[in-house]
Amino acid sequence: MRKLFALLGMLVLVLPVLFGATKAANVTDLHWVTRNDAPIPFVRMVFSLSSPVHATASISSSGTSTTLLLKNATIAGAPTSIVMDDGIAKSATLSQSGPDTVVKIETPRAIDVEDLKVFTLKKDTVNNKPYRMVVDIQKKGVTPRDNYYGKKPAAPVAEKVPAKAAEVKATPKEVSKAETKPTPKTAEKIVAKPAKPAPKTESKQPVALPVVSEKPIPQVVNYRTTGGISGKIIVLDPGHGGSDPGAIGPTGLQEKQVTLPVAEYLKSILEAKGAKVILTRTTDVDVYGPHASGVDELQARVNVANGNQADAFMSIHINSFSNPNVGGIATYYFDGSDQSKKLASSVQGQIAEHSGFNGDRGIQPGNLYVLRHSLMPSILVELGFISNPTEEGHLKESSTQKDFANELAKGLELYFGG
View: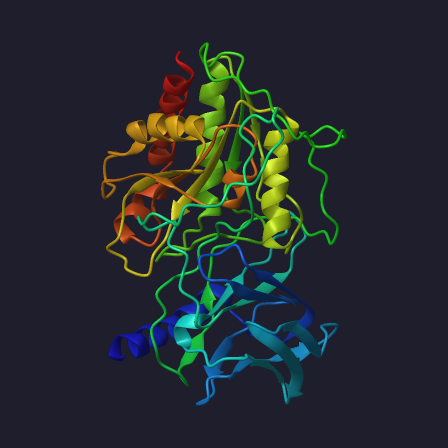
């Protein structure tokens, strides 16, 4: 407990330096979305602001009411009440208390400080984004899905597929990492934690995917597995992006800030070997659209692979866990696909012993949406743990990102036999 208060004191000191919130801010909008694709489902609220704010949050002694105080902020366009998710965060109301905006969030079950995250995103002038305050509330009483932490999940039930289908896969749920392993304590104060933002695209409508033809997404992909890497179509999926930063490390490094450069380096290497490479995103954007549901966002990534008749699909991620000592590298495949398992083995064999990372976590079956719904051999790589301070430090370095790209390329080359 002493450590918690010491940390909060540090954050109070740091925020004014980073954000300099001296002038009054307007709260201009509020969006929310349920993310059922995380290890623990959560509701995310995003407040749009005209300028930076200081914020504190407290949880009532009952644990079912959370109060967020946006200091020196005026409601100016944001809704004053919203109804959200009955299972996680039922409702939120905004009211004015003198110069401050008070947000009250009601939850169906008692939560504690480990279930609540508050962080800020800076203004993005490139993509015309305002300052934002993000509030995440995790679902209480749910055992975290542990696909990412070295345990074998229950064998998934395969769907029936057409006789002609080449490796069709089954149903939804997937990635986006909230910290797992909740621990108790209520009625503690939390100060908004700054997170290093990056450019985003704001659009209420789904964005068109330029790499997918306007024809219906196919139900069968005639993928190739031999003959070398030259001429093969490979889709790379840099995990997260846009309104979803992914996991965040101890110093504020965001998962999406690592996955995209690794994918870009890998694309260049594979193209030099004669492959055709397509990225699900080439900038810091949501693939489907900002604040989309988990299923819509993940399906948009799958559509890029299926729509382009890819020979292989690789989703690139960084792991996270509540214990900062946990580390290592793993590769996931959809159980039941022999080619996906072969691809996972070929790639994991190249990345597993990367210097500075905590060893080989092996290949593991993962009941993940993008793997279930891709119609070609598909894997999801977890390049270390961003929650591990040592591994986060390496992941920041462009040399590490390039080395991972070279190793991933060798694994793909080995898989295709070239």
